[in-house]
Length: 432
Image 1 (cartoon, helix red, strand yellow):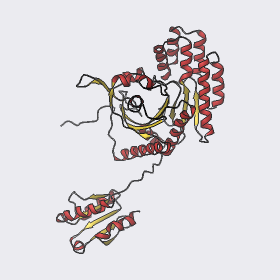
Image 2 (image 1 turned 45 degrees about the vertical axis):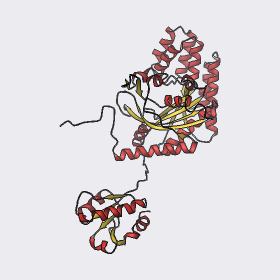
Image 3 (image 1 turned 90 degrees about the horizontal axis):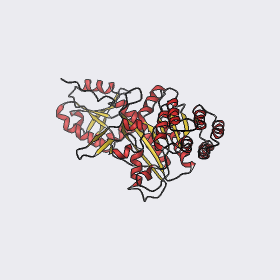
Image 4 (image 1 turned 30 degrees about the vertical axis):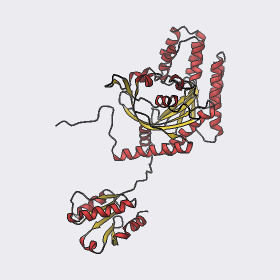
């Protein structure tokens, strides 16, 4: 007999793992509600041209792309932003701005499986469409901090940069967008020498190369100092100076909000996705060297998909990576879990009465689990105790004749006879 396993890079989530995952997802929804984000649901399968448009070379190479039975080239979504931008460019194009949109679900990339990296992974995604002001960027960082904190993560570190600084230098040096993308892809992988080689071979001046080299080595936790050094380095590139100013305004707003965020400014920081135009960031914890979340500003994507010019900023949070970080930090996860009440019939000829009592309790929103294995009462009680069930209802012929059942408190090892009409009320008092 063949022993089937999950496809490589895919996973089964067992009940305990699923419980933690849904807890994180629940906190994401609470965060969305706190900040006024409305949930949307987008297809898992999208047009290949849509998701490939500005995905970046690395993502394009790793997409699950195929031709469907209608001859259309499609792909499993590798990220959410393209789908949200499509929706804003079409169905939501006439909706008043700003649009605060939230989605959650599975994504797919053919990556090499390793710790914290799978081919099917889960994210919550927040997009703020319409505003260009730095307050919008600050909101995305602040909600990310609040969300991470709400699940119990500690020592969260934000790595922050600005694509506009690097792009402005490359543009002023006369480099085509395709060449810029190649250089930025290498910088994203920290292959800085390769990136500078591409820039040099494309005809950039020695001054431009030196400017990029100076930025690549510049990072620190004192944002004001790093930003001042960035301004001096890029002083001959006016648009880059404006980008540094924009980054400073965003970080000032966060500081003024009173929410302490541990931020490292990295002047040479780049991300693989090609649609970013402004601030970019990733979120880490000291125990892991993989990003738990990432995002940034992208002002041209909606327009690229046929919509009106729509500035936008967003973030994706890796739900399964957050699970891993919680494990690494040995965090206590206080997930409220309602244990069901178990109902055990003394004999099989009482099964119909047992079902009837179960439905009475369920109608009162009391979770119920029936003994359906045909065990004797003693064995069924052992099973209930092993699984941490706090209360058991024993249905016997003698008690039924009096319209009653036996209610056993498994923790106190006590039991009483309770009228069926009073059972739900009694259970609620004991369980609460």
